Length: 316
Figure 1: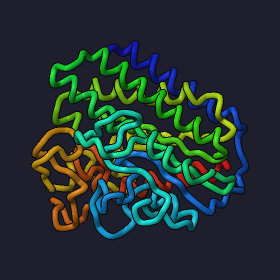
Figure 2: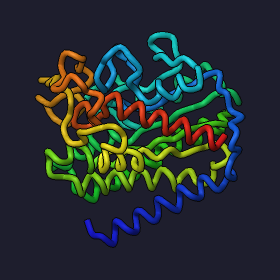
Figure 3: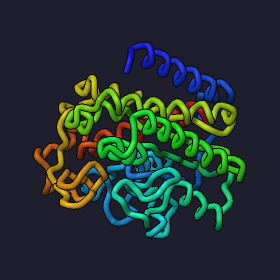
């Protein structure tokens, strides 16, 4: 990947992000939004335990950013399976099956939105959260590594997934959602997965392309949509962990190896959905950015939840 492409991609991403914010003005310093319901769609990054496990250290505490966000507003958040309003499901792709682990039963983000809209209408008091991208990049990378497609096809598919996620955001806005928070993928080129596979450049390019297509496709929805930049905060935490009271942004803190497909990066890999406080390499797992080679540990989740909350408070 050339430096010229990186500069061009980052400029496109920054421009789209700026337009998305500018479309709705600067917002009020004193927040007027007090949601009565937080509704979440997405993948393992936002899954608060749809199948009983979360993709982080499962410690019976607040450990997923979406949960931290909801609690900051004083709103409970639980899974649809438990009667709540979080539809996010681990390994879910945006609009394609099977999921990252090869499971056809996992609802895509598009299906999650469809299920919600079939029995609900978004209201002005809803805070709607939509995330995606990680699982699609995992699957496309696996297909590339298996020789099933070229890098060009992989990146084209990733770009389409970004547009597909934007289509779901548009669907929610057209159905009446007025406060929609959109989160793309963090830079997977900075993940332990990228380091272990030597594919940092490719995964950074894929992450940027997904986020750029997502933002460009949402640029006219600024009145109702706020993009919260996971790539920005996670890059900062990974580059300067000590500034965030963290010490390890390199190693996964979990050692819960999954002999099966796990999170989609291969059999025999650490799967944080199986991780508990008994399967960590350091008792102070609060110092770690990553739980497994892809998904964050609780401290990083909480910091991103706080960041998202501050962005929402300053916007609405």
